[in-house]
Length: 160
Image (cartoon, rainbow, N blue to C red; front, side, top):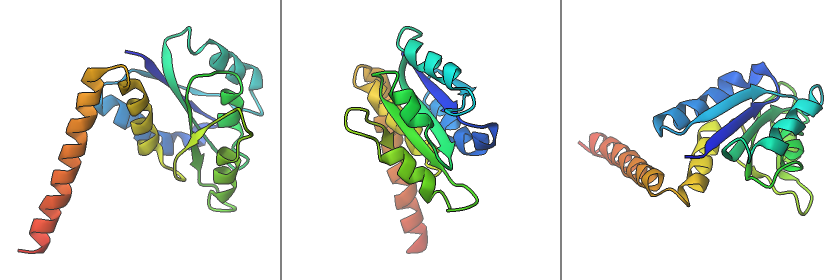
């Protein structure tokens, strides 16, 4: 199975990114997590992206706040799917990060999830990998069924 790369611009993003790690662990998807900054460690971020395919990755999740250039910097250096997690900051509640992540120029796409949407980033990475992995696709189908059952159980409790 291909791995998922998780890159965060700062270790302060770890509490957000942890939800992606937890989801990948639940689905038994191997991953590696690193702290590389688009601005403070651009060579390391670039090197990771350039070598990601050869190193067994199938998708990359990039989490950053504020200017949030990390996902774009990673995507500029790989043709693997890149999923950006805009992280909420203290100034504009994450809107700055959201716009920085989602407004990529033509030719360099970055899939973008909600502000602090790490669990969905992991699920999207899993769906990408599941295109070629029937066992993983089954796990995702089963998860959807379990999630629906939880909602229906809450409905039953509400109406009893």
